[in-house]
Amino acid sequence: SQQGEEDPQALSIQEGENATMNCSYKTSINNLQWYRQNSGRGLVHLILIRSNEREKHSGRLRVTLDTSKKSSSLLITASRAADTASYFCATDTNAGKSTFGDGTTLTVKP
Amino acid sequence: GAGVSQSPRYKVAKRGQDVALRCDPISGHVSLFWYQQALGQGPEFLTYFQNEAQLDKSGLPSDRFFAERPEGSVSTLKIQRTQQEDSAVYLCASRYRRVSTDTQYFGPGTRLTVL
Image 1 (cartoon, rainbow over the protein chains, first blue to last red):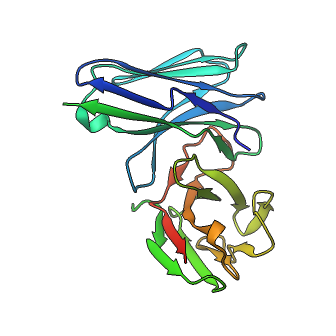
Image 2 (cartoon, rainbow over the protein chains, first blue to last red):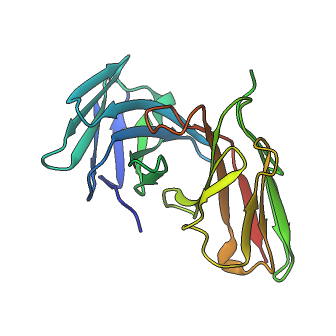
């Protein structure tokens, strides 16, 4: 069973616009990670946010975490066609394994 | 300095055949994970090794699935008597340590198609 659920399932925007994806989860976590997956390829780690952090930035990426609502968001600013991919959130517990949602498919039109 | 590698990248098997999928983690990484990703879904945990010890195999869907990491480096996921529902991408990942704050690095995956 999946721990995280991403919303929306699919998102289509124009190049230059911002893209926001949300993730909700069910149980307590140690941290939450966001990954990108291009079609037919493995997952690329984007950013990790610990359970005691509320916001984190990395380049054009901004991640927030609200543990009281058990939710996280990923914001990609000034999107580019190369950002077209599927984006997954994954929650980690003490066991170290990751539990993924089903992802948001982002399409950035040039 | 290479990343996680997996072989083969693609495997086609007839129903009932046995298959073996290989994972070479990043050198020195203690933790190794196997995930199964069905089309259009997120990866689902299968099993986890710390060095050569298999500490968690709760995600293996049936006793036809078997994983090993005998020397604490390379790992093999074996599926016996493959079924059509085993068709998926099998992803391997490694972490430097067990702690969840370490980045998990994924391989490119093996796409298994069972006919």
